[in-house]
Image (cartoon, rainbow, N blue to C red; front, side, top):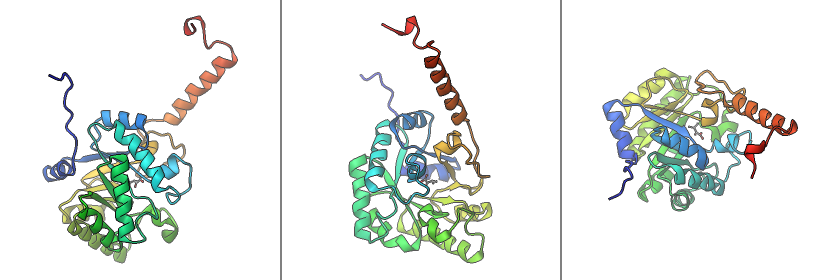
Length: 271
Ligand code: KIV
């Protein structure tokens, strides 16, 4: 008999049940093994291997440069750590917009080479064919509407989306389309809380918000932002739960100081 307690893996069906019973869904990004282990152990429902790795891990200004190979590297590290959470991986810019066959190949590579449980894609009706093809292969898809950072050069800024009627109406229609295609959930980023509420009430699948107010079925943040590693990034929607930049910086300064003053290592710290 095993002495290890079985951990029940969160599935897309469990996420749907959470919405059905009004339980909020907790989602957070992670990009490497050690962070993902902490996030998983804390009881996260969904870990997103976001293409925000391009910003917070690689230091790029946008999410556009990250490659499929790099996403697979991050995702496989996260999957090795996640015992309970559902692991969803962003299809990076350029890996699915070309045509639906390329989109399917990209999604299959992520599933096969990282062991993740599904993919996330930015866009609505424009990517319907690719979404359908990926879903037909049995790969769960999470949609992403509102501020879609892969289109930053089209938008021009990272400000709130869908404030005007036409864009809000398109977003409502895109959410219905993604649901009808078979997406299991949709992220809505930086849209008015009233619109997010309306969307969450108009579809059956979970709506996960980032900067989209309290009426979404769940919330997602970028881990570096909520832990205060990303110094200086303080948008209104962000609640910062720690100030790791200062804590880590202080610890590392102490380490440097101890080496310089010859107090590290001491006699107990050697063989
Ligand atoms: O890449 C990412 O981290 C995301 C979240 C902001 C939802 O897409």
